[in-house]
Length: 503
Image (cartoon, rainbow, N blue to C red; front, side, top):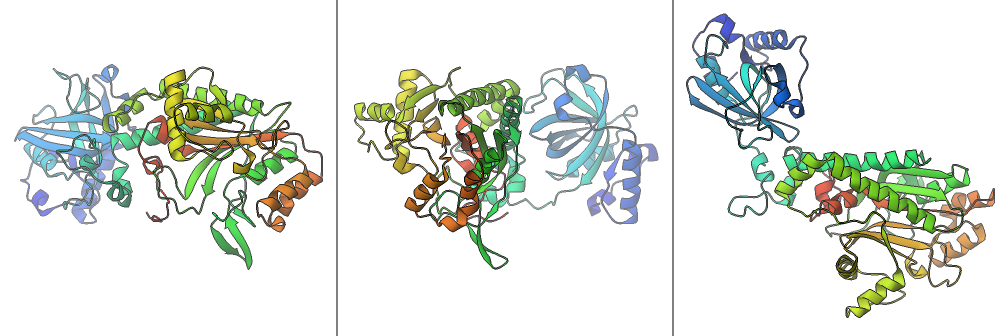
């Protein structure tokens, strides 16, 4: 305890047992910890999310961080506690009946912001709705209060109130992104961040639910490889017991080998590493990949069918399951709900090029789209079809990876597709080449050392592999674009980019 706390006047034991710090290593601290353990014994913590009108009259034990604390008089004190972005007001009133003393009111005033406290009290309905808290229809009348972890009295390098402030509130200080990421453990306490990572979890959950229901098998592929899986030089290279190795750019080769092994339909949720010195708002050096691979019966459109149903279901479930979280994000980062169709729009690459040309944009009909062209096309699609989620397929072969199957009717194009949200690409997919000789030819043309992918190519030689294909998406980018956030670092728990390797 602080010297100020120790100087509190002596009071009746039945009152003094109802509050105190629990972490001090002094004899006084051990005594306080004993009072706390006795008070909470046999009780279960109640989540703030359950604190509604149906709980009125119930005694609860809650744990939260001190967001604000003040005393209105020597007989009345207020606390606002925060748990996972939810807040509740707690009121301490001095009286014989509540066994709340004047010293306890002083103790409340001395609590430092962000301290973690355990509080026992009665849920009551206030005369008027509580302003400034998420739990507006109830408050807690304090009976016992114990500080489990006391935050330092000196201001932290990042204040939660600054990190939680909307950027539209320009008259008050707003924490910049680097400061937020440098002190991410504090930044994560804001209601918007709590909501963002709950939504991110729901994206992954809905992804798994749909695929498992549709007979896909979850797999885990190696993240250490002898060579790159995408071609090019954007790999993190390392020494593997004297052998050259790199971090996997994707699970591409191994998920195809799983199809060779007869698993028919597979998916993976796992880390992906890209050594690209890209400083854009949508690129990371490490992200979580949502990858799918499947046998094809007759046409690569079967893969697009899965993408269509999967992501429409993900978006629908987010809107159904995450209403409070979406509201919390919107308060700090205002956005309009994503527009998407029950049946996802599909355009050929040539059709997309024509839309751009009609709008006066010059693009290479056999080249890739740059960021500006993608955004412009997204704008044109929204105006014409009233959707911000669509597919562009039949891409030029020259801009796709070596393992992409060319179109049978015109090898200048390929059986491949990209998917866009709000004018930005989130998914890349295609039918794969499953003939080993053709794979070798394409890999050589792309400058890939055949020795580094020998096991991959051999897997097609060892047994007949059916036509197959798949796709990959970045979890962080999906969440960023669904919420219309301005930077992917907001949806990565601890981002890794060319300048950031900590925390």
